[in-house]
Amino acid sequence: MPSPKTTLKSALKLLGFELVKIKQEEIQLAQSYEKYSNYTMIPKSTFIDNLKLCRNFKSIQGNIIECGVWRGGMIAAMAELLGNDRKYYLFDSFEGLPEVQEIDGEAAKKWQGNKEDPMYFDNCKAEIGYAEKAMKLAGVVNYQLVQGWFSETLPKFNVNEEIAILRLDGDWYDSIIQCLNYLYPAVAKGGLIILDDYYVWDGCSRAVHDYLGSHNLSDKIYQLDYNNCYIVKN
Image (cartoon, rainbow, N blue to C red; front, side, top):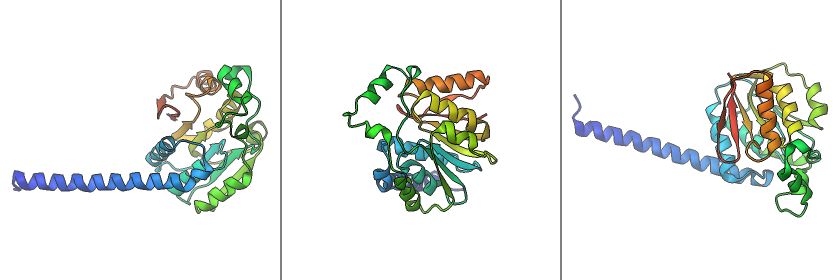
């Protein structure tokens, strides 16, 4: 029977290995942010938290979809993490955000009206070539860029396979509710839905509540950080 001293040494050694592993993973995630920093406007801490969350759902089979990709840095990093044996779909107008509506709230109106704000990013407009470069940088082969307004592209999208991770970064009510209406039913059981703007814009949170309520869903909303939240589909 091992002595208490031997047992303690073994436990400390195992703990040391675990701490080294955690440190290495943290370094890798930070390096991923640096790699794609020119392709994202997401803050570093939130970017890394998104990747940590996706890592926890790596075992869920299915496609990965992001709606609202800007330059594609977030989904490119997700793709590098999750692997090349999936399909990746990138939905975006690549023309910026649609016009804000009353339901989106006063803060949204103010933001879209202030074109001098450093966080305006030309109304979140980005050339489609950036997303193409980001996905190539990730070494991903099986991806599709779907250009156009969600109201036009989502009804034509053939959702014939389950979705493992759905990341929504569409900001406004109409955009989010359209994404939920067309894509949420295809999310796999135990799949992940990341809501980028839930704590930022009124329209996003209203769309989420309206969708869950109108479909009588008990799926819970979990806080990721002060910017993002997520749902695990029941």
